[in-house]
Length: 88
Image (cartoon, rainbow, N blue to C red; front, side, top):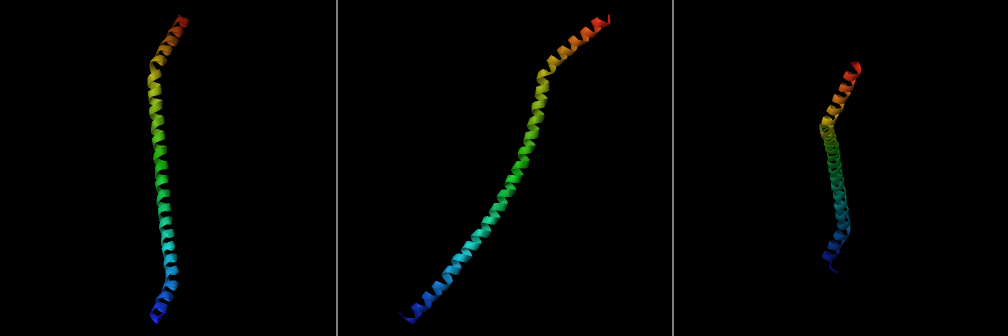
């Protein structure tokens, strides 16, 4: 082996593991960054879901009352008629 080949081999053996370690470190940092982004997305989605659930409950309550309003009026009219009859 020539002196040049020995020098190149020594450099590769020394610097290649360092290069792999730096790539691993960069990958780990990027993974932490993405993890933080996903946590933010999930937290925003949870807040949006709670908001939509609240809106759905309000709409359900509105239409539930709208559906039974005629029946309530009928029963209140019947109750008023009974009270009037009892008072006479």
